[in-house]
Length: 154
Image (cartoon, rainbow, N blue to C red; front, side, top):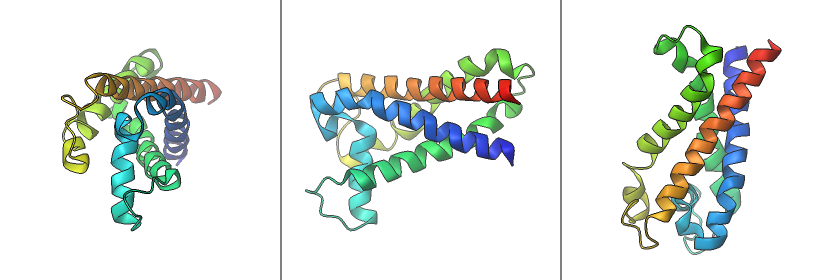
């Protein structure tokens, strides 16, 4: 149970850090320039029956933190699956790779389906995709730092 709780809290912390890191992209490019927020905006209009023209950050961030929490929840189960014996030495590298994997798995195959915008050939160019990748790497890094801190307290 402690592992699940730690993963959940780690996901929330990492999503908070990632969200803060995405604010400059939002200020520069607007909602369509922050892929995760854009996807969550469109999903929230369907799930919560909100007009698409109305941007409601409450629902965007609800979905964003839900996804980040669930990803954090799953992370503690990754090292045993790939048979890493000395977790403390590899946790940071593994967590950054996890952030990259989340970007590949959750963005590349679904972004265009949800938003109608290509993730790479985006109307704003390649920089939003790179910013999204950096956000996911930051998520992984923050998750790894949190997990290392929790391992030191246990």
